[in-house]
Image 1 (cartoon, one colour):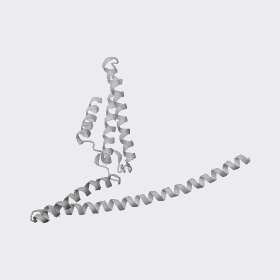
Image 2 (cartoon, one colour):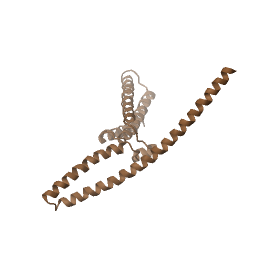
Image 3 (cartoon, rainbow, N blue to C red):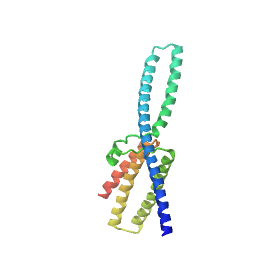
Image 4 (cartoon, one colour):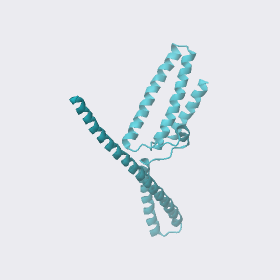
Length: 201
């Protein structure tokens, strides 16, 4: 019993430590959410000012003197620099998903808050493509040369539909987090999903 009592006492101690850390974690989450909301509001205000200033620059340039044009050009250059910086700020803030993701996932926050998380997600996306593409290549080879099976052919086309659907979702999440995936590449995967679905039917 002495050993049991000692272990139970240690457990109670660790339990109190865990509860304290959990309370601290919840407090930090609330603080972070408040900070995110405040920062998002500031971003909206700054974007409104930037849009107004750009419009004013375009209007004033028409009748400005040489000296004024020089000053306006400097302000315009500074605004362009701030627009790039603004995109970096927005990359780490929660953002509303696009229509496609809202239909598929609902109103879910799909923003990845750190560069490490974004890199890990992008890496997982690339590995997913490699693994499933390899499986599809093997199945294609078997179906073409060795196995004449309607069931396996259906499984293969179902795999293609699932693969391309998953790719489009993952790519939309990556795009929402600042990835430079080209629009035509994403559209190609939408078309591939539809084609595979037709073949499955």
